[in-house]
Length: 315
Image 1 (tube, rainbow, N blue to C red):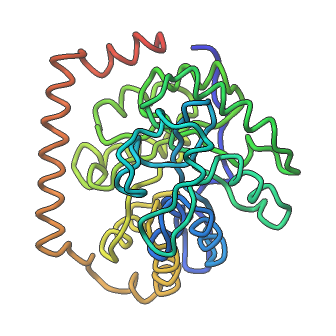
Image 2 (image 1 turned 30 degrees about the horizontal axis):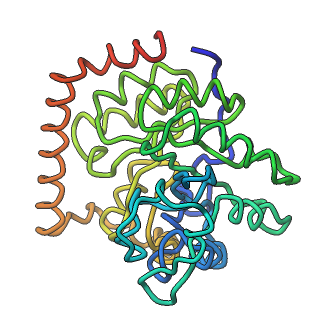
Image 3 (image 1 turned 90 degrees about the horizontal axis):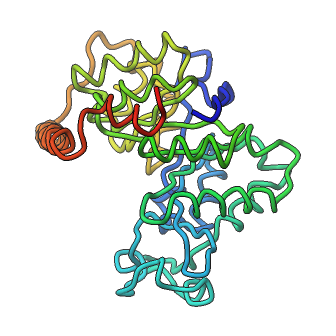
């Protein structure tokens, strides 16, 4: 392992008059109100009071880091092409299918907005997608960050989200000094990769509600790691995330979560946790089943989580 990532105390849960509350991380901006991953969605999230922005990175054909969750353009822009097959000039002319129609931004555009002094309290969780060559996108990320000046250093405002040990290893090599978070849904793989010092966790909320996943929370606390959860959409999941003592929640609707936090003293006074509705319970069971099946396939094809982490990181 090349180095150790720094801690990120500025992303920890908040001490409030109502007790500890998680920070609100706006999922692709305020996507409850505006097209996801657009500048209007990011600005709206900041305006309603978010603590952080979560967003997704891909590379254009000519090496520009653009903001898009999907590797393809059909769902958001109605174009039957891959992001990686289009130059920035072509991508910049696209408009979202969802109203109000918006262009696809570059990471540079978001950094320039958040680099303004009045926005420097906002931090960013970057979801580095695995559709591009890892070394290439991380190198371009380092170059893009270096091109935008800010009073508060980017490595005190940005957490790099990595989906596997290879991305963790390359992030430590190419972007040393930046905090990291492992993004995942597998409790067993997460437990294995937590051997990396200071590696924070950004976990699927359904996983954290299982017996194996719930054990990660006290383990992370013992190791002074931050733990975030995605994607929180209902009051029931919001309540659970607070009761679990999470540091941050990735949510589509930052205003709704802020309002929920304002009501937390009354909610907390209830003697019992609000149970998931039947539809939510069915969704949780289905996702847990899919996670178990995927873990089994990965074990057969790729080996145990511990062996995969050791191969990439040497630990």
